[in-house]
Image (cartoon, rainbow, N blue to C red; front, side, top):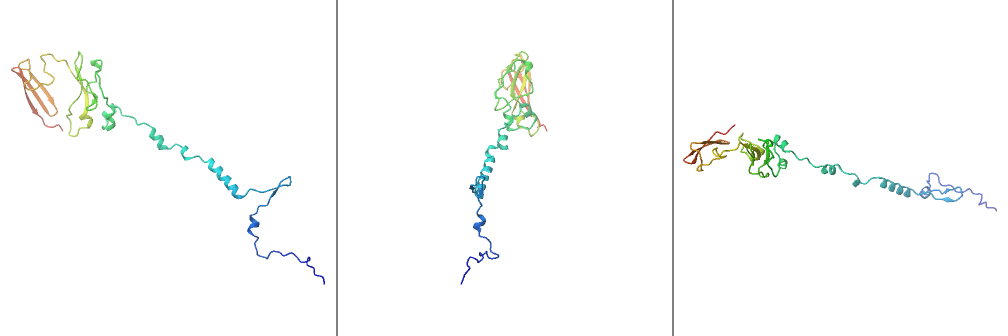
Length: 215
C-alpha cells in the first residue's frame, strides 16, 4: 500500500496569526552590484549620529555675551560743578568740586560770586591779593529760607574786596581790639544780625542787633 507523504501540502500559518516580531525587526541585507551582501545601519546608530551632529552645531551659552555684562562695563558719567549748582545736590556732586583751589592769575579772571569749592573737601588759599583788591574762596553763611540745600550750606564762593588803607575799617572788627581813627564807625552784617563797631579811646566798642529770620 502506497503512502504519498510528499504529496501532502505544506502547512501554512493559521489564519489570524501574526508573524513573529523577530522577523519584522530583522533588516534585509542589501545586495551590491558586486553581489556582496551588506547590512543596513540599525536605527540606534542613526539616532546616535543625528544627536552628535545636533549637539556640535548648537552654540554654547557662555559664548554669547549677556546684556547685563555689557551694561555694567559702561562707566557712569560724573556730574559737573555747574550741573550740581542748578539741580538738587547729590552725593555724586561732592566729587564734582575740586580738592584744591589756586588763585587765578589776574583779578579780572576771578568769577566773583561763583562756587569754587565745597567745605570739608576743598582746600583754598587764605587770600588772593591783587592790585585791584583781595579775593577769597570761602564758605559764606546762608541767609535765605528755613530749608537751605546742602550746597547752600557747604558751598564755597569767590568773594572780593577793594584794598584797605591803614585808616580803613578792618575786615572784621572785634570788641576791644586796637583802632587808629577816633570816631570811626564800621558796620558788619551776617545772616540774621547786624554789628556796628566804633573807635573810642583807641579801641573798638561793638554792638550787635539781631534781626528777624527772613521768610
